[in-house]
Image (cartoon, rainbow, N blue to C red; front, top):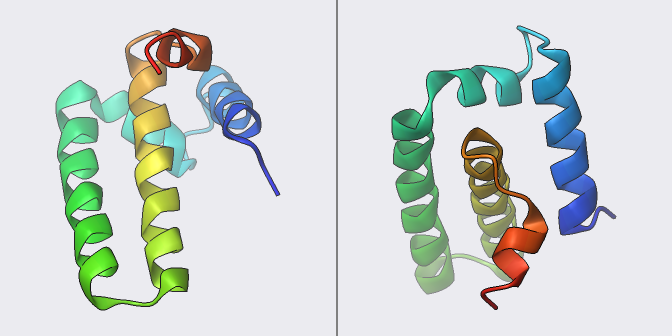
Amino acid sequence: MKTFEDLFTELETKVRDGDASSRTVIEHAAGVHQIGKKIVEEAAEVWIAAEHETAEELTDEISQLLYHLQVLMLAKGLRPADVWRHL
């Protein structure tokens, strides 16, 4: 099992290494606008899953939302600690 920080470090490494076949690298390179659109889509899927799907399907959707949020954090130069200060 990965922690939030473990995933962030993994994604950060992928972006830094720049593997052109990496979904993370492709999304990061697409920029904030595209990443934001994906976050909105995933947030809607979380809501729908919460209303109509199983707990397992909901957790899958939440994990996807967290992933895209982390890609946005990387695109904007943020670290998990930057977010934790606001919690």
